[in-house]
Image (cartoon, rainbow, N blue to C red; front, side, top):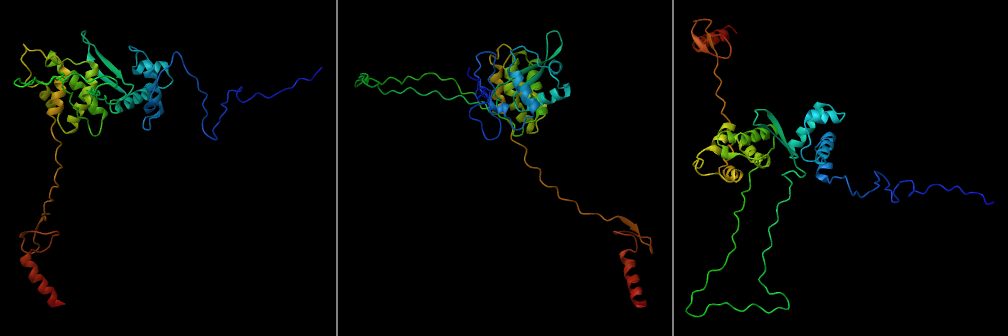
Length: 307
């Protein structure tokens, strides 16, 4: 009977990839067909977010709409405490992955509305312009018959397709700040208290908040921003059909310039303190007490004579 050969398990059977790099991690790839989430490397490999914030951002992107992402709800699911989770949420909000606003419900209760972005607005790709249709005839087809007007008839005006007015490019702050961003979101969410026609959605607040932050960054007080956005509104008989577009126009076209640099204040000359002369008791200014100018000269002459 032949003896049984005991062969070592091959590398492929042991779960180690065939091509192993000389150093670093080696991946065993698997293509998921269900229960997976597509996450951009701009989040998973973010150079300024903490590991807690990156993991929390990936978890939030994997949740369905309507899932609870409050601090207490997340702390009940993970081992991190409320302080660490609150800090991670602030990081994600500062880098544009989250937008949290406070709103009052019809019942009078305050709630926090959270909007999560797979791609932050600062790095979101811009929409590409649509290519114009070419008027050249396709290969193999005859050109269209000429429609040139005959002599004595005026040419018809060219047909132009109506185009929507381009949306204004909203201003953005030079140095994003989390506290300023929250103040901007509160200003926008509270505009409907001044006029119900300025009701904005959570998405509109998140889109316009950086523009309001740019105003606040230039030294404009929140009350002044609010007055500018709500001043000289159309009559109440006329509706504001697109409040977000209306506010975008004002935030862009009425943006004030930055404050000029404060000039250096010239230092006032130093004023010497007052003293009373030790000889004539007259008041005089000097760095140290002693004799006034009139009494100092005779005293100096006397000292020189005795020397």
